[in-house]
Length: 415
Ligand SMILES: NC(=O)c1ccc[n+]([C@@H]2O[C@H](COP(=O)([O-])OP(=O)(O)OC[C@H]3O[C@@H](n4cnc5c(N)ncnc54)[C@H](O)[C@@H]3O)[C@@H](O)[C@H]2O)c1
Image 1 (cartoon, helix red, strand yellow):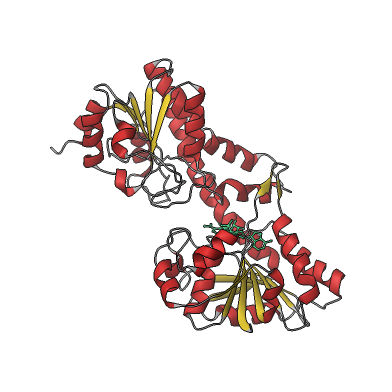
Image 2 (cartoon, helix red, strand yellow):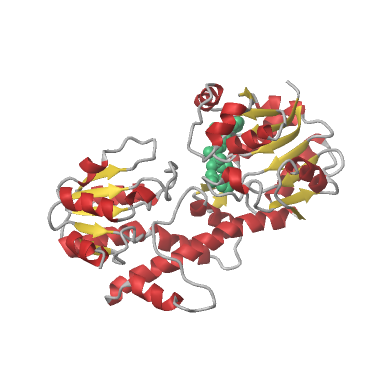
């Protein structure tokens, strides 16, 4: 089963990466412990949506295995395992530790181990030290360890793998060069740095986004308190202002943004600052529920149609989506909640059923399917006559977080 590269963890990061290597002519071993995932790939079916991935899967071959030790058949071993945060404000390294322990007996000089997962600062040096301690290797000379963080956005993998600068933080003398050799299979520029700088660059890429979206979300709540329109204030801030701009509000979450701040918060110099950012984004669903109650009164037995379960637009990824939190909070108000999402695996109702006779419709995910006048007209036809529309994304273009359907229609009607 000899190969050029093994990829351990065929998730949303690992599978597209394995396919991309194979598409460049490398012999790839894909390893996962999840039998359903392996069966799907073996059957030639992408287990999740990623633009262009099915076409690549149709034309390339991967050798598949559920045994981590098989990874040692390749010189390069890439780890694309999940790295959640523990509730202790600490990275959960259990999957990485389990795979390292399974690899220990089979690692040999010449191997390179690449951490592609998002990891807390210091993790690459920990992994290098662990291999030295357990096997007596000289990392950077006998075997090679590097962090090459994944920064590609879901849905753009096959475009960005060739364009986004590929950051490589190699431990010891030669690790960076060895791993650069592997990633030169792609066209993206390679940027060499130290392990900790690569770790910080990835985490802070996500912290920047998470904090960037917290600001308009906080402004949205402040505007409600002051009786102001958040979209008008944003327009005032941004109009013809040359020094950057504020983003627009929304339900900001997802498996990466929601937990990566914790890796920095582990040993922060400003403890609590990033937790506050998280608190702002996490409180948006409650803010929306409270806003609905302020306008309609108690929600018991009122029908609420929730549009969108995915964590962001046009993806089928629901992990850590705030839509689920919104649904839970609405259910705790004893509302009758109906949900529609055109993309996710979780079964949802049809659009028509979700909005039929609804007292409230919330655009929880800004899927392109929901944007524009057709969706609004369909809601107006089917929902209760005085239906409240909650649209923090401004999907309908009325620039109102809370407004009644007739108001939204009037504000968006062509002149
Ligand atoms: N999803 C994204 O868009 C994205 C983007 C950038 C970075 N990241 C980071 O990349 C990493 C992976 O993310 P993901 O979304 O692909 O995760 P994922 O949960 O989709 O995939 C992880 C895979 O690893 C497998 N696995 C776990 N333990 C294993 C073991 N012991 N042996 C073999 N297989 C094992 C799981 O079955 C799963 O298929 C995380 O650190 C994440 O933070 C994700």
